[in-house]
Amino acid sequence: MHNSLWDTRNISYEGCAIQLFFFLFFISAEVSLLTIMCYDRYVSICKPLHYGTLLGSRACAHMAAAAWASGFLTALLHTANAFSLPLCHGNALGQFFCEIPQILKLSCSCSSLREHGLLAVSVCLTSGCFVFIVFSYVQIFRVVLRIPSEQGRHKAFSTCVPHLAVVSLFLSTGTFAYLKPTSISSPSLDLALSVLYSVVPPALNPFIYSLRNQELKSAV
Image 1 (cartoon, helix red, strand yellow):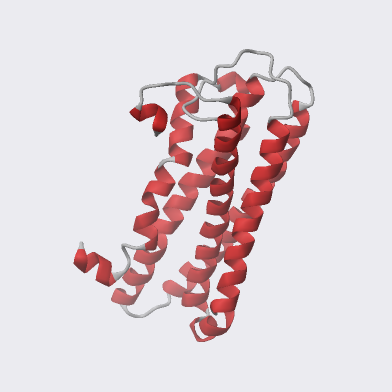
Image 2 (cartoon, helix red, strand yellow; image 1 turned 180 degrees about the vertical axis):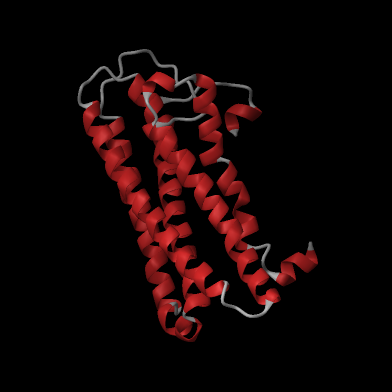
């Protein structure tokens, strides 16, 4: 945002490291929180009588702490590893922010294999979250389709579909951006993918978190 407002494309080495850390921190926490939100929908629809027990204030606090802690650890490992690599292929990133694939392109060390290993582990964990979300939604839709009231089914679907759409967009574009073959990589494709997973899902978060709230909708 600073570079856009001040019409500059420069960022310091330390600033790039800090930007990468916070980007990875928030993007990792976003994956965890979207998974937790899916669990919340699963319990509220499939096990409504156990909602207070399974998702009490203590459980919510523990899940939130786990989301932020996992995001911090992921960001710390990736940032420390990416900036421990010697960079000898210039200092120009083909992106509008500091991103791991762009930093690896500047590296001249075979130790970048270590970073690819970390990326593979992160993708596996993210895929695990996605499988959990898909399994949960299969159970949710099985229960919703048995609801006799059309209004009840519509309410349940309208609550779940926006979340599922954002999860699908976020995880599919993010995974493809980091694991796509280098043979199909291009500046325009990299830019489009980065916008799709780093800008669009957070911009849609208010629709998932807030606009289902009747009081807020009335105020709007």
